[in-house]
Length: 415
Image (cartoon, rainbow, N blue to C red; front, side, top):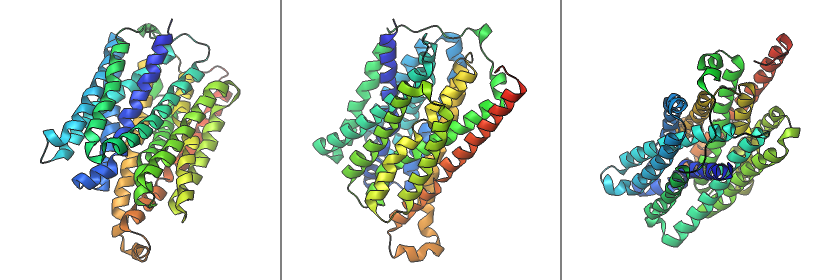
């Protein structure tokens, strides 16, 4: 009955990959064309995820009150409009195109926030004995979408030329428009009724849930920082061709991200998701350190790619943990989780941009400038700084395990 709904949700997460990852693929091109700084490029990511946070929190109550369909269709429509505005920004804002990029980012990110809030809730509401597997598979389509976005955008840039990047953005805008019409007609399972729904107050007073929110924020920072900056890092810091960074670095990152999620979707019943998240975080730490410090560009590139496997379960695993503990929370649970993840995904990459801009001006590092360009030094420093995200994730997971054990010892029944 719900096969068409599940397919539309998978395509919706594909749209989410477009909304999140298309503009970072154009960062270096936009920086060169419009004289943008690292911070300005990173600020677009900050705006993207901050807007998604606002959308997550603002729309959670209206969704519970008026239902899913009006808002899931609105999300796709806003994604379409925002991508069109992004493509037209230099035309609509000829003197300050960056203002146009920011406005467009706000619009399509609002749509992306609605998709992130609602797609998980739609899948969770569909009757099934394997919700964790379904959730993981849903999130794997974000990774597959990421790969297709990278491959197709790279191919279109080669085919149409860099100057025609607005046409490429317009082409991508057709995808959310298509899924807008899908969600007008697919069946949607009923959500949790108000009288049975776990309140926001109950969630907010649970130390375990607060740790899950902190964890998904750190997981979002760890995952999105690498995915957002790999293209620019490989091109500007490792001095490898952009096509190598995009096709090898980003595609392998996304492929391993999707593979990790798909494998958990198939075999997750036999695995403790906490262990997968813990050791994945340790792997991410190693990958960040190697990417930042390795003198061999190909080894750094491999580390960027392998990080995708390490971070694969950090976001969906957090959703699974919370949904298992609070199965009757409704849209509010997904809103708070999405807001936490987006907060990390917003601040993480932006702070890397801030660090990358600041490091070359540190006089104590002046001897390194004789061996590196200021871009390379800045980006390597930014990548090394980002190691703090998976390190804190390991700490957070350890605290979650301790808190969970203390609850079990105090009461045999979960609450």
